[in-house]
Amino acid sequence: MTKARTVQRGRGFGIDIGGSGIKGAPVDLRAGSFAADRVRIPTPTPSTPEAVARVVGQIVRTFRRSSGRRPIGVTFPAVIQHGVARTAANVDKAWIGVDVDAVFTEELRRPVHVVNDADAAGLAEARYGAARGVSGIVIVCTLGTGIGTALLLDGRLVPNTELGHLEIDGMDAEVRAAESARERDDLSWEEWAKHVQRYFTVLEDLFWPDLFVVGGGVSKKHEKFLPLLHLRTPIVPASLRNGAGIVGAALLAAEIGDAHA
Ligand code: BGC
Image 1 (cartoon, helix red, strand yellow):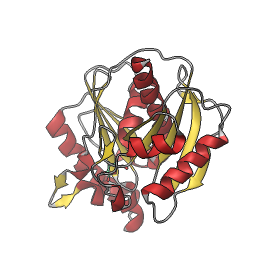
Image 2 (cartoon, rainbow, N blue to C red):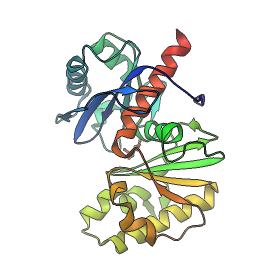
Image 3 (tube, rainbow, N blue to C red):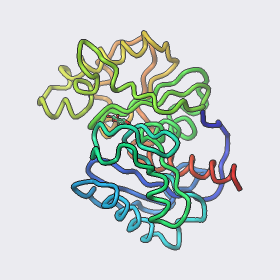
Image 4 (cartoon, helix red, strand yellow):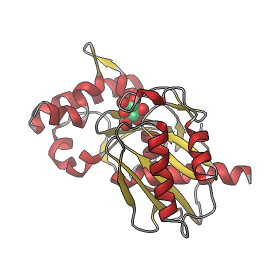
């Protein structure tokens, strides 16, 4: 579990690796926001470890003077166990078994800490955003190409929960309830909200959370679907939106670095 701390200072640097873009920015760790405009480079195809590492290097070099001295935090859309990718639901399968920390550390010649994308977003929401100060159990769900989840207990992260892959009604949950399902099947908000409703109902019956936070790109349009849900658990949009991954990864890497300093 990750230690919950209250205030961080100074600067960190975060990179968010997604299916279509790789984004990076220096992060003001006290405010939990970007310290400069982020840079985005399209994700290479195929998104092999070597190709992605080159882009990550390019982004960090853009900020040579402002990337700070701390370890760099990187999000990755897969289970990350002690720096190693264990799954690859929506990325190139060549990543499975790769020590992602080591690949990027070698490319950048400075320490890098890789974390699951939803875990990074969840940590950022717990520290700076919609779940700040909430005690008990919070589940942050990012609805995008897949469904990412972060489980927090009193602000501490339990990593790699992968609740987007719960089997619901005979199917991997993210196949029906991710934002990509709405686009793929050209669903109305009402039609898609039925799948989202089913998903969150299963989650609340299993975990009895105190709060759900919904992130991912679709959270910008939360007023289209959150009012259609009927849950016993309060459900709110993420407040850091798409910046949450970069901010959370930078925070985690800075805390790990400081703990070893
Ligand atoms: C992956 C998760 C990831 C989520 C969001 C899922 O398909 O298994 O690791 O967090 O997508 O990107």
